[in-house]
Amino acid sequence: MPEFPDTETLRRKVGGAVAPPPRSGRELRILGRVAVVGFQVVAEVAGGLLLGWLVDKALGTAPRWTTVGGLVGVAVAIINFIRNALRLRREMT
Image 1: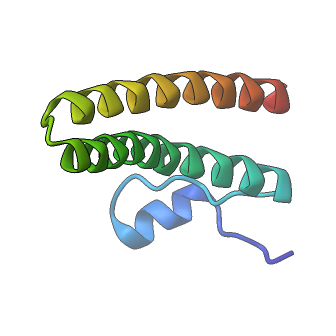
Image 2: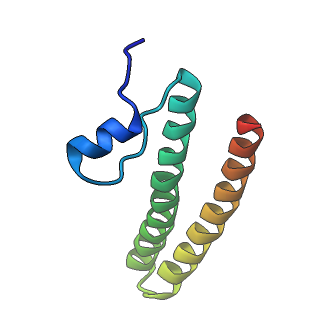
């Protein structure tokens, strides 16, 4: 594993606050999962809106199903966000 400079050395080189680089494979896995959660939330809301828009377009009922799809997408995103947060919390302890 490569040797990383300490945080103070990094601060002096770039002139500001720098987070230390991840030190282990475990930290990299957790960082990756946190990043995925953000993308997942956006994708779930966008998916709900898209499905609702397609139903509205087919039935000519705009914006009824787009609204329903967006709300369902938000609900799914919140549920999955909580589940992922609890799972990450268990892994970090």
